[in-house]
Structures are given as structure tokens and as C-alpha cells.
Image (tube, rainbow, N blue to C red; front, top):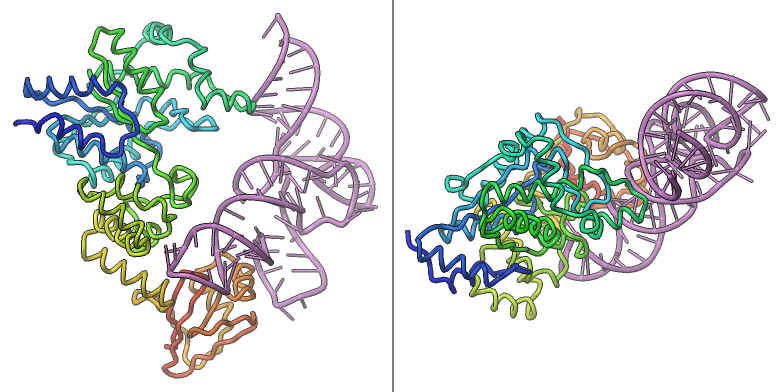
Length: 404
RNA sequence: GGGGGGAUACCAAAGCGGCCAACUGGGGCAGACUGUAAAUCUGUUGUCUUACGACUUCGCAGGUUCGAAUCCUGCUCCCCCCA
């Protein structure tokens, strides 16, 4: 196959990147690749501890996909061995080690999800236990002699934890070495990672040099800011949009991001052509509301297709903007002629955790029947022949209740 | 090896014999508002009960006491300092 001209490739590669270390080496690698008609080896390590991928992960996976589209070889490392350590990056706690069974299960889930973004056929998948597993204790000692303690503890992750009197296990120091050893083993040309991975990626360069290899180029992508608009997108902050989420949730969550994130979301997580991004920038200024709807639509479309994306848009307009009951609200039936307390009706729907919570909701005006707020916790509903009510509990829970 | 400090609800962190279901902040939930599921403001945040109230909860197991998250004993886990 023939590769695109280097400058064209570079333009695609650089979309959204924060830093390429060093950029001129990347250019050299691309030139050589084109000249020799040999794809670059692009490496991404993934940690099989959190099987729920979200848009934050998609930033890097999409970059991998772009390399793939340019004809390069992408290699996905399932960090089944490194997961035994747990990447300390960005952590304020030691991660628990996982059992081999968990890791296997998680890796599968990971691949299923990553397959929504990557071309699975053209992706090489490797497990780093294959080469890290057989390393002897002697090998570990030799490897660990290549990094100093000073260099390790100057890292933010560690120094903060150290100052806060939080535990740092010795084995966590081995993580960057293990990850770097992956690069040596795979002879990678480029490794991708978030900006928080810079240290780990650079260790890979050092180890490769030490091994006499042409060192990898490190390409850092920004950490996507979550829907709260401040912290990085992460499951533990609950500010994420999962790539396996329902279309409706995806749409709604995308719409909840602050306006000043609209552009970067277009740049980092959508397939909008790079040339169109300029227009998007103008649109955001002129009409943030509709541009954000377009963003929500685009994201939903990428993972669920046009049809579901349109429905999600309608669903949002119907329930949130017009505050109507959605078509797919569940139905609950009660005996004809019976009189049931609202409290028990809600309990029946399973919308709340306890009666205490239900009462609280009612008192606070969070429950309405047929569009009318009910604030009396003793309110009763009589089901006569053919009666049917629309019940709304909290912001987003709807049900139809009727007699049967 | 020696010395010191700590374990409290989803998280962080007060409380140190009754006034504690437990201050406060974050988070969550709800209301108002809004183009929005954002921001902001307000309320709320153990279980059961219409309510009075009852019950379970402060690392684990016992004990002292009319009464313990608070005192004592043992156990488990964690952090710091010195060596």
C-alpha cells in the first residue's frame, strides 16, 4: 500500500495532540516509513481494570484509529501483567491487585468496547504477561537499576501521596519500567498516552535507547474534561459519558457539558472532518445551543447510528424541554376498585430506595401525578375502571399507572 | 528493632461518657431558574412509622456503666519518626 504524503499524515496526527516528543523524530519516522513502504508500529497499552470505556478513553483510541486509517500498524497491549501492579498515575491510592480471572474478563469487555472505535481486523492484540511473565528476579533487578529513586519520587503522583502521608508500595515504582519494557519488546515507533502518561512514555524511550533501538516517539493527548466542566473525565468522578451508554443518556449527558467545552469535544471525540472544525468554532460563538445539540447528535450517531440519534434528540426535547412523559415509560397495574397510597405506588415502581426517600421526594415537590405536583405524603390514588395516570418521580423517572 | 499517631455514614473530616442518627465540606437527590440533565440559589441526605416514636450504625470482639462513637482489654489494618 502507499502512504499519504508526510505533511498530510502529520496534519491528521496532530489534530488535538498536546505534545509530540520529539516532533522531528516523528517526521523522520514518517518519511522513512513512506520511503520504505513500511508501516510504523504504534503502541497503546491498556489497563484491564476498568472495563467501562468512556469518551475520555475514546480520545486516544480515536487517535489510534487515525493511525490505522493512515496505514500504520497499531498494537494494543492488554496490560494483564502490569495490572498486577496497577498504574499509580493520577492515583491517590494504591490500586488493588486483580485476580487473573478478573483481568481476563475485563480484557474481553475492553476489546468489545474498543472495537467500536478501532478496526479490530487490523489491530494486533498482545498480552504483556507473554514477555513480562518470564522475566526473572535478576531481570527485574537489572531493569530497576536503570531508574533512580530521585527520579521516581519527583513525579507528582508520588510526591503528593508522599507528602499526604499516603502509602506508596514499592512495587508501584516498577510500573513505568514494565510499561517501558513493553516498548522494548515490541520495538514500537510511537506510543500514545494521555498527558498524565508522559513519564511512563519517556521511560520507554530510555529503555529502548539503552537496548540500542531507535527510540519511540511519545504522543500525548489531552485529558478530556468531564461533563462537570472541571475535572478530567473519569468513572470515579461520575462525570463521564460511556461509549456503551444508551443513546438517550449519551445525548442528554453530552448536552450537559459547559459551553466552553463544545469545541474541544468536537475536536477530540467526534469524526467531524478536521477542515470543518473552523466552522464549528464560529458556530459555537454564534449559536452555542444548537451547536451543542449538533455535538450531542454527532456523538450519539457515532455510537448508535443516525436513527437512534434522531430518536434521542426527540426524546430529550420531549422529556426535558417539554417535560412530557416519554413513550417508553413503564406501565404498572393496580387492581380495579382499589385505593392505594401514592407512597406504595412509588414503592411498587422501584424508583426509590426506601419509603423515607419517597416521602422526602413528595414533600420536596419531586413527585407529580398527571402533571400536578403532589406534596401530601398521605395522598391516595383510587383506581376505578379504566383509570390511568402519568406518574413522574424526580427529574427523570416516569411511569404509567393504571387499573387492571 | 524502638517511639508516636490513626481507623466515624458515599468520600473527606468534627465529635472524645448522656443535649449524637452524629458539626462541616464535597458528592448524591429534589425544588426554583435556564437553551440544557450546565451554572447559581434553596432544601434534603440511616431504616421503619401519618406522626409520637422505635430500631440498626462510628475498624472487629469482648468488658465497665443507669447510659459509650466517646472509658478499659484483646485483635486486625494503616500512617509517621528514629534505627
